[in-house]
Length: 366
Image 1 (cartoon, rainbow, N blue to C red):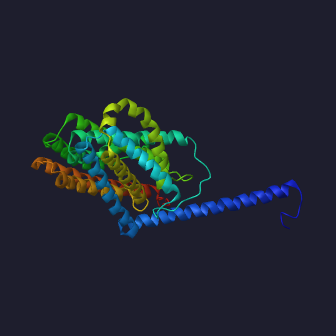
Image 2: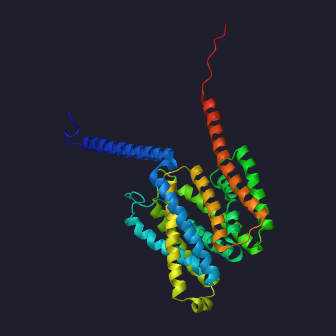
């Protein structure tokens, strides 16, 4: 007899329970299918044509943003706070557009609602995004692009410490050893880079700290099973929060009379173009993360930094000494060792955990 044959409340409750159970099983099946698809994409890595395409786009937009940053600050004498504000405003506008027009970058998903503490999390990440941008621009104003990018290569050291504090991530022995060439190369670059400046050095290190905080905290937000942000969502909502934070910061940090005097058509159009490049640099990095593992992304980011360092030397003609060149290579090689050592330690822990779970054979006493 079917549960619908009776008219009593118990029959209706049983029918509703069965329907709810069926819906839950369907959602679980879809979620498992999505996770499986994501794992398959990570296994393909950069062999996936779309992953390689977004890698190239990420490199291209990163160089365009970096080049215009230096041009605005050094040649047009633009204000770093205004530059950071324009980048956030432009990425907010384009992030909103891409939430409804993905432009083939990702597949849009339907949302049932926002998670708890949504705006608090977005304000925190937005504040860190804005701080990272402004501090990076301040560093560019005092030191060469090559020096700024070399200091940023020490990000793994900050990531190890922050990940340990925020998410309790353990770092293995070989991973710690791999940090030695990174710090040694950084010391070489800091001591012998011809454009070394204390203010620029401190700003570059502070950029590292806020950027690593932002990345680790973003990892906490996007790794949940119930709510996964799309690249455009993460871009748009954190940019809104960053714009809200930067409004009072602009009045405090910006010399408004000087900005009004220097703002002309050339500077304004360059700021807008720079903001567009900055948006696509950020969103292509988010999209790329969906195709490759974090270790591969870190290696790609290391190669990108080395690429930008020497491309900036060629483009801007910054003088580089032999020791600073050796330091740059040492930092780059050290970060590559770091990513490999972290992968090795992770595999080693998995083998140890798997061995500890293996039941011991039962021996019969005679």
